[in-house]
Length: 116
Image 1 (cartoon, rainbow, N blue to C red):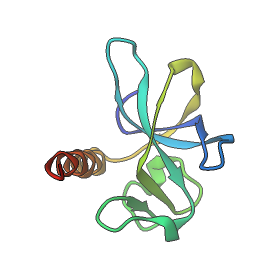
Image 2 (image 1 turned 90 degrees about the vertical axis):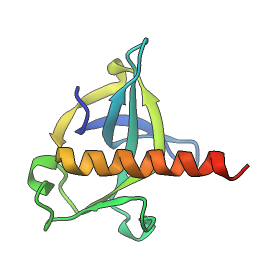
Image 3 (image 1 turned 30 degrees about the horizontal axis):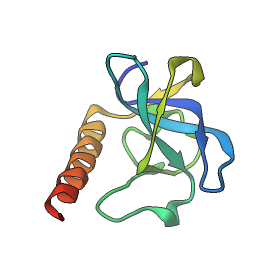
Image 4 (image 1 turned 30 degrees about the vertical axis):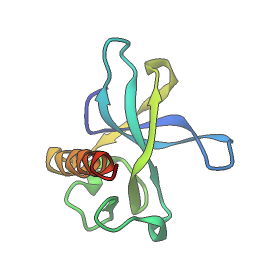
């Protein structure tokens, strides 16, 4: 697995039930080698403006994503998963989109520290 891969893995839902769903690999954490991922949903109405990324059929990297429907990459739907919990890789997003997501995520956490 590499940064920007779209994988299928089991993620916890708001109701506590774990469900297999697509997720974006943000990076591999060291020293244990788990992957930090963010969940992907087809519920486009849940997209947070200036945070989440909508990946629709008109996006240049939609065909390479392996997703079947337009989806939202929920940047704050974060989870750490072990390699053994990843069921498989279905695709990849562009490196430009991955960098943009990383920027939005880091910007969000920088803003948290300035709110104290």
